[in-house]
Amino acid sequence: MSILLDENTRVLVQGITGSEGTFHTKRNLAYGTKVVAGVTPGKGGQKWEDRIPVFDTVADAVNETGANASLIFVPARFAQDAILEAADSGIGLVVCITEGIPARDMSVVYPYIRAKGVTLIGPNCPGLISPGKANMGIIPGEITGPGPVGLVSRSGTLTYQVMYEMFTRGIGQSTCIGIGGDPIVGSNFIDILSRFAEDPETQAVVVIGEIGGDEEERAASFIKENVDKPIVAYVAGFTAPEGKRMGHAGAIVSGSKGTAQAKAEAFESMGVRVGRNPTEVAELAIAALD
Image (cartoon, rainbow, N blue to C red; front, side, top):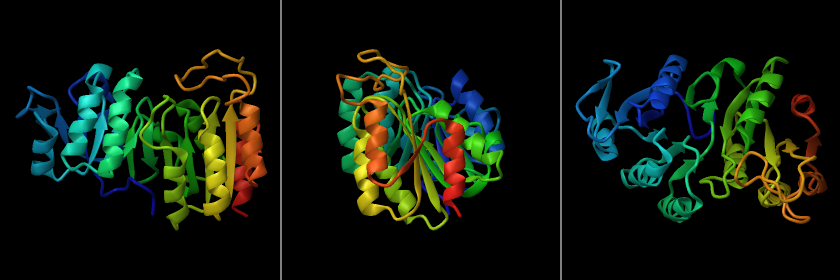
């Protein structure tokens, strides 16, 4: 098994006719992902690359193709409407790659999709991959393979690094998910950890956090009470200066809160081993399988 995404997931791509949508849809198709439709308002009736039908609305695409997941590549100013349209059309899984979405827009999206029971990954994220089954986003499939380790991360680049470190040591992953680093994202660590905890194919989990907010601290408490599988963590930003945003919009230390040291200590106080670099994280995750 895997979580959220597998070979039976029927994906539509909102923004499929744009440059980013076209580039990554080709990569996802080449990986084996079942992309069944595209959506671009005003271009309904066309065929993308002479093979994928394009619709004006998500509802039309769902009705005609049975799509149950949406991958979003639209510009930031259209992203709020795109997510809400997918949710209103019966899509259960929405992955929004778009970055630069205003927090005000996400403050509308977040309660809406949660109330509908829709799983939103992102925005400003690399998406997710269930190695050997399907890839929904921009994660390079060449650096991973099927295996027993689940991975959830706030950082796209560190996701790739830890995946690669494990894969080159012969260990693959069940599902890898980049949840995004914005202040408001659709899914948090706890949402994903609860799914990995119930997945019989996942034997251990890697959590990759970063400075800012309290996601890691809340995840640590959740793990202590709810997860009986081995968990290994990494927190980026031990040398980050106070008050300076580091990359992601949500990655900022304010006073003594949100520091990498405090997050690492929160994990360790709950029995979670914390690596101090991606290589050590991969080694700890592999050792946890023994």
